[in-house]
Length: 596
Ligand SMILES: Nc1ncnc2c1ncn2[C@@H]1O[C@H](COP(=O)(O)OP(=O)(O)OP(=O)(O)O)[C@@H](O)[C@H]1O
Image 1 (cartoon, rainbow, N blue to C red):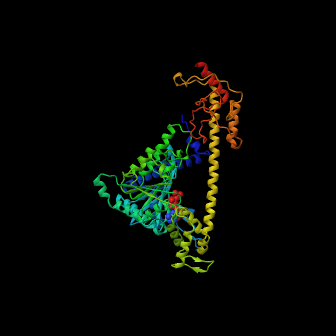
Image 2: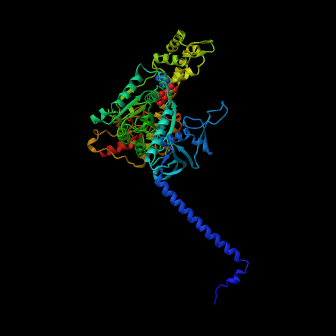
Image 3: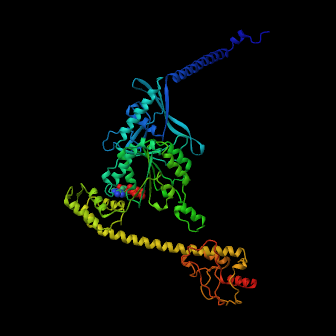
């Protein structure tokens, strides 16, 4: 028996649809098979006849390639742009505005989202931007912008030539700038992501420092780079460390930028107080720093407690200094490893700055890690004169209606300006701030300097008084708090254990304390007094004036007159030294007498 009666089926209306469907299905399968075969073949050919490379945003090489693509006009084929306001970050954006007023206010950076083909030295090159998966902080996968470049040739050297040309072009382009790579991004992993900034070179003469200081530093760094083989022969790691220390605003960072500019070095800068920087981060980040770079750690004291601080903490000092704060997870040994590691790749300068050199651990300062220390001071009269002359060199005084360029009057004004202050009274940054606010009136700037100095002195004194007052209040509150703490502790574990017999003083005559003890009134007693103590801490003005009494003190006679042995500052009060109110003291002494 025939299962399907074809002739009968052929006569039905559905037959045409089914047959067409089957035909399309077969054709689709063939087309897909051909497509797959073509992709397979293309990939094999591409693999065989092309070389490719990946560049990830945050790596310096990414910057080279983006600039290379811009310089080769590949962007002209692009229809996708990322527009950013002009910032110090970019040197490779394309300005497309026709209006000269607003040209240069924005950068149009091609995104290359769609693949672009272009010719370079007779080779076809394909470029595409995409988001790469990288290993982020804590091993978490993370996305980062990346550029994938394919050169259609079997010769791998073409790719490396392209990258070298990109690097050369980049260096040429950024010559007037100092490039600063900031380790301020928490995203890093297999490839570390730097935040890149650029600053125009700072002319050396714009930094007013004691005669020869900058030249000396630059000469030292030049000799260092020139003596690489000597370091190798001597078996000494080829690195040199400098510590610049002194008050804020005295030119430490400016010096480092000037050295970098004059020797054409990149700066890789770490801010160790960032919460996400830890030892592993330091290690990985330094490994990505290329040769002939400056590794900079600013405010190095902020990151680490010195060993002396650690010793303080062992002693259980109740006074915690802010420098003890360890903002990030950097340890001293992590930092030392990083500095030592800088030398494993040749030709790097290590610079550290600090406002407080005495807080640094001696291990950090030993030669080999820090080879030169340079002290920066507040401005001398000569520096003040230099600053004045530099800022007003070509200035036209609108008020006086005169130009002072190269004029003896400018020198006279500079002298008048500098004579109004004492040496080492103001930082160059403070003087610069004052002068900038008088930029178009040099004569007035010199004449008004006396008034400005007087105002600054008055403000400083006021600030100092307020600080001393605050310190005093905090000290008093701390003393009260300590007293309350002991009271709470003592109330919880009565009776206070008497000292061992052999430590006791000779037996005392029986003691009868009067109901009210002469001498200082006890500040607190019992739980209610703990509440009172808390109120005092909140509002020190409400504090009773008496100081707490140490139980280690035994009254000299039976009069019951007690003198508080506590340091009036309340600071040297050891945390476990208990205080006791007279009723408790009487209990204690009676207990001792009873025991005797
Ligand atoms: N010696 C100087 N000569 C000229 N300008 C100076 C000098 N010192 C500071 N300045 C100016 O003061 C500002 C701050 O300077 P800089 O950042 O170099 O100081 P710093 O010592 O690194 O301060 P900090 O310790 O706070 O980082 C800059 O604008 C700089 O131009």
